Length: 236
Length: 361
Image (cartoon, rainbow over all chains, first blue to last red; front, side, top):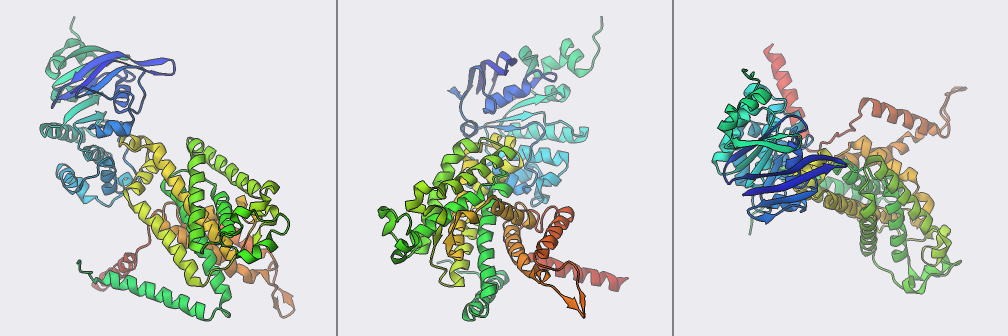
């Protein structure tokens, strides 16, 4: 459903993404893994329109969205959970959720209940300013906020960043849960181990290019990946 | 038809409004003895509108804009021109002669305020195009510049047939009663409050809190900033018009940068991001400067002259109070909270709880 072809992005003279191509199929969890500066976040930002790509094409359900405004892309059914959560700190939890549905005009009550079912913790903290939540709760809120736009594809930029392992586990369970309910997930992770475990398809990015692709399981078993990202030593 | 529910809260609210109406009615009935109080209330109300409109930009949208005085100046002149009695115009414009195309147009106050608001909004839309691409300090400087340009243009000889240039406008009809002033200001503030509580208001706050995330949510940053600027300028212009009616004159010297800072002070003292805070700030600062007037007199205890108290001393104390305020209460009186009568209930409850706890011990 999401097709990316020959996407290139430059910041000034520096090419952050060099003509990458990949597909995200309907209903799957797709993950992009790679080290710092590989161009993963830039890829997501150019899909949602926060960064203007230099060339290439981004299609959703066959419809070209490259070069469109972010608000138009959001109405096409793509949403981004930004890196570092980026909740609105001085707004209440409820207001944060409502902002997630900013592009919608229909009734929100059902979706708010749906988010509360996923994250009962948020319901307890309805009126609390989002800035006073813990890191894990903020991440929950960021995911819940993204779900409020009723997306077809939810893109997550490092949801495990700066969270305790047990909370990371919880977040990944939620990602699986969301995916089961029919939302396609495009996940960026440095925590390659966790990401590959739940991913249907996976891509490895290095210095702006995709160097490896396969299913999550395949890549998890790949020796190079193990050495580079999973901490195993290559036996010679 | 829907039944109106009479909860305690609605009854309480109606009672509060009734008390305010009775108080104002009393002041109006004893207009001559209480003219001083009426002046303070009217002035505070007008400043409250200006402060809330500034807060809309600074506190809710997070755009540091300092063009309020410019828009107020514009509003004062437009309202002045359209409400001045026709028969007196030749007298006021004795030097330049009033341009014929506006000479015979006189409209009621509310219409004149609307006209000035709309003109202010259009100008805000036009200057917002380049100016709102700037951020923080740069935006403030650009708007300060705009504010001075407005003053210079309105005081320009070339526009003498319209604005009476540096002579300003006078003989603008005053408010018919204190109710007119309070109601117009109340409606303005209520409209801004509605805006803030709508989904647009949420978008304003989202931009203030985190513009990256706001953009990722699909909020068009520029359009929403533009909207906030246009609405804020509309009401700043209306406040300027009210000011002209209150002072019964309009002159460019009233609307200097100092006025912008004065309003900024009300916003900061009241609490950035709180409408009720801005209203409170407007009343406190306007009335505070009056209350401290006793410091301007000279006092003698027997033959001993009390030191320091003399003309101008009130401003010294006022400044010291402001400094203390900013040092120890730097979020303003209200912070970003809104006033609610539930507070009193909560205070009452917590006192009750404390008493009960003491009894148990």
